[in-house]
Image 1: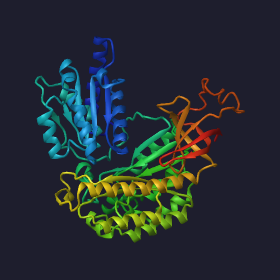
Image 2: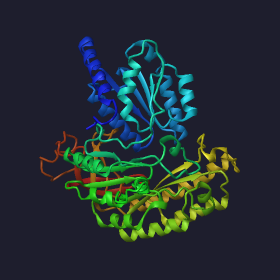
Image 3: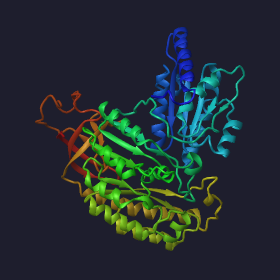
Image 4: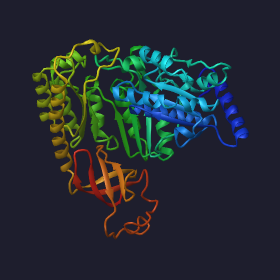
Length: 495
C-alpha cells in the first residue's frame, strides 16, 4: 500500500521497533496527540497522520499532557488560527523538557512559509520537526531523524515536494460513519487575499482509481457519508489533462462514479469555485440522489469591481446564472457561501452590491469574515480606505441580513419529517442527538416524551438508549423549531 514511497518502509520499521522497545521498557505504549487547526483538508491530513502513527505501533493519548509525541497541524488562512496555534505551542516548553523521549512536530500550512518558518525556529527552538502541508509521507522520516540526534536541532523537511499524489496511506477516521477523502491539493487561482497557493503549492490531482478504492473501502468499513475535499474540487484533473492525459476524468465524472457506490447514503464535497462550476457537473448534481442537495459556492463579494481586484475571475451576473442553473437542476438545493467584508478598497457602493446580490440569492447559510491581511499575498500590501468602526458596522448589517435569510430558509423545514444522518449525542445534553440532513442542515433532536416506538429502538425518555441510535444511524426527524444556524426536532423513526 505504501511501499513505493521512497525509503518510507525503512523509517516505518525503525519507528515501530523503537515504539515496541519503549512499550517493553516503560510498560506502556508510546503515545501521540494531534491538534488540528483549519479546514477539512487539515482534518484529513491529521487522520492520515494518526493512521501512520498507529501503523508504527503508537497509540492515541487522551490529551497533550499524557502524550509522548505531539503534532500541531496548522492553518494560516485566518489570523485567529495563527494566534491559537502559537499560544498552544508556547505552553509546551516545560512539557518538552521534562522527558527526553517527548517530541513536538509542526505540520500544515505554516511551516512552509518563510515568515512562519523563521518564527518557529527562532522563538520555539524546542520543536523537533517541521513538515509541509499534505506531506504525511515524510512523518516517519521526521520522527526517525529527530529521535536519532545526539544533540537537539529542528529537523526541517519543508524543502520536500508539496503534493498529495501519494498512493493510499493508513488512515484513522475520526468518525467511522464519515470519510474525508482528499482528491487534490494546492490551488492555481491566486486570489489576492489568499495564502493557500503559497502554503499548499500548485494544484495536484490524485489518481482517480486510488480515490475510488479509498471510497469503496470506507463504505465497506461502515461509512455512510463521504466528503471529497480539495481547495477547488471543480478543477480536479485540469493539471493532468494539461500534461497530455486527455482521458483523465473531470470532477463531474469522478463524483458520478463515487455516487454509484452501493450503500453510500450521502456524498458531499467542498470547496467549489464558481469559475470552474461546469454545466457537466451541474447535470450530475441534479442526477444522483446520493449527491448532497447542497453546494458551498464562495461568493466573497457582490461587486464586480472587487471581484476583479480579488482575482476571482467571474462576475456577479455569472454567479447568479450558476445559482439559477443549480436550482433548476436540483430543486430545493441549499446554497452556502463565503463573504468578505472590508476588503481593501471596498466602498459603500461595493458593499451595497453584495447586499443586493444576497437579497437576490437568499443564501441558506453564509460564512462571513472581516478581511484579515495574510502576509505574502498581494492584498496584504494594499491600504485600507475605511475605518475599523465602519467595517464592523458593515459586517453587522451583513450578518443581520444573512441571519434573516437563514431563519427563513430553516423555517421552510418546519413540520417536515427530514432524513438525518446522526453524528452522535450532544456534548452538552445526553438526551439530545445531532446530525445533518442531505442538504447539510444541522439538526438537534430528542426522543418524544411518550413513544410508541419499538423497545428495541429506544426506551422511555431518560433511560438508557438502545445502541440502534448512534453515530452513523439514519433516522427521520420531525422539525419543530427553526433557528439561524440549526433546526430542532423529535425522533420519528429509523430511515
